[in-house]
Length: 363
Image (tube, rainbow, N blue to C red; front, side, top):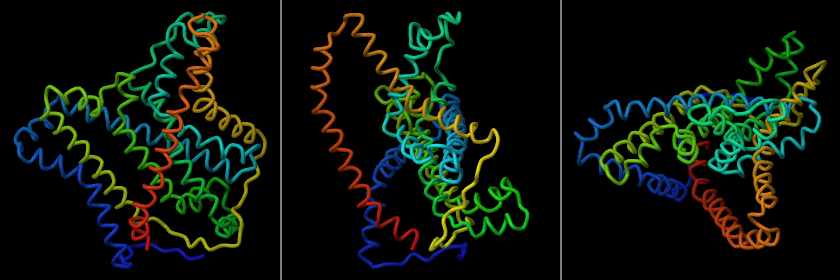
């Protein structure tokens, strides 16, 4: 197995390079529009982004994005390692269930947890027999952090699990034969080879967090996106300035991630060996199993259960009959088909337009 560091020269057929350049130019149009609009009012732009009213949302956005990125990276990497490198029970099933929170829009997740913690909600009803009369409000930073972490960790889990499943066992076996513990082998051998995949997932989480609007709006947490939305009608200059600030922040983070990734250890994964499996002993196996169950429960089962509970509660209260519910569900067939069709078309289009850029970036 060979390893390499460093840069590769961009090469490939001119048609492929032309397609990649066209994609980059297309994606640059919104950012270019913001640059042109703010260039005509440069004084207003600098005054706006340096004002305390703009710096505060920027700080809150960064705080939330960094916190969510760290938490999602820990959860996603930990879940990937447990389900690909250990003998935890049901690991094949968990590898199917763990990415499924991506199906639930984050703002729906925020609504679900807000209603669950609300007065008369599911959690308050369940805890009432234990003497809990009222739960603390679920909003602000901690509410946004909790929801975004639960629904973005799959962005780290998927690439990390794929990478961990590909790594051959030769280096790890050599480290173990030399007396290195499992813990040190993970940090010194496995993690350096997986850092690129984990970093890519973390970058997606960070960009998702700073651009999210639905969760922070429902949670009433003032980030840049919320301020941009609030000022879009009565103060267009401020909205444009803050939008450019958000775009510059995203570009800076991507450039920083690429700079850091230049030193990432790359392995030639043409292998015939299977990844090394670790047998968990003692309390480690039930602890790992409980952690995976808790994560799937919080991110997938609880949202579905809360939605079902509200539906059943409406039926029991008489606000909607079973027949009316079936009619409503039948009326959703059209939107469901439209959503599925749009998702499929978007997925195919994304693969088609990004593939040239991805190919040139690694070749």
